[in-house]
Image 1 (cartoon, rainbow, N blue to C red):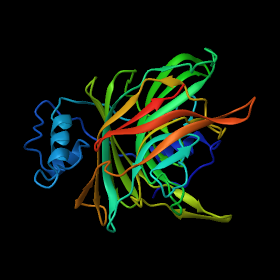
Image 2 (tube, helix red, strand yellow):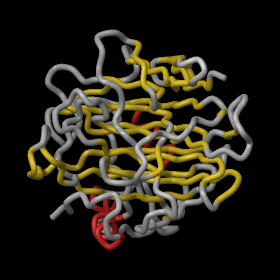
Image 3 (cartoon, rainbow, N blue to C red):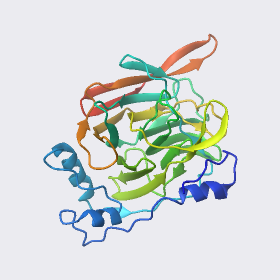
Length: 340
């Protein structure tokens, strides 16, 4: 059974127990032939099912391009990093296509016609981070780049399965630049992967809803030909407001997000200051949808996304300052740009 959420300060063993539920997969050997692999072969090595080439030709080409490479399998690291950062949900939904958040910038979409998002994916280059203009070179700064589902607080009991990279400067005990690959089902803390990632690496992420309580994550470092597939089960969440019981969370597939975030360091909920960063370009932004987890029946791109700008509150004088803005260069790409 999926584990109940432990306290942020709770025993390491509880967190390890939750994250160790992630499935172990086999490495695809040199004789693995993607064109001949059946559903069982793909599942064994942690690859997603073959998309319908006629119904979703662009998605099929992405699938073939990524998974026909000779990728080296790397398992997840179940223990938490020395400093645990915390992703959060985003701003409340508005009725315009432009929103503001104090910790998110990027794009998200909502499905129509009674469908739920079951798959989403994207490519991006890991950004380079620097102290922001006027910021102390020795200060601690943080950012994370990810795709995820259900991150808008307006959805009752929403949680947030997500996967991506994180880019820091001067973490406690780690001066200079630190870059990590990670996975999380918020509100659980994230866990890092063993996968080596550095600024400039080309990443690909695929998030697939297996069931209402199970999500399969796939992170690929294309530059280094490394892949980490991982499965998480939905945590138990408390029932607001002020009800001391827990409820099994589930995926609603109500939103799909492509986001640049400034995370916090647990247990402090206050986000870190955002570093300066090279523009993040999310490419291949597709989402597949169905009425329930299973074979998709619809496809979405960024035809009519909501774009989120990020702001920070500054003092002397007290004011809100835009620090990142989102754009949509095409129907399948989104950008996040630092605003000094």
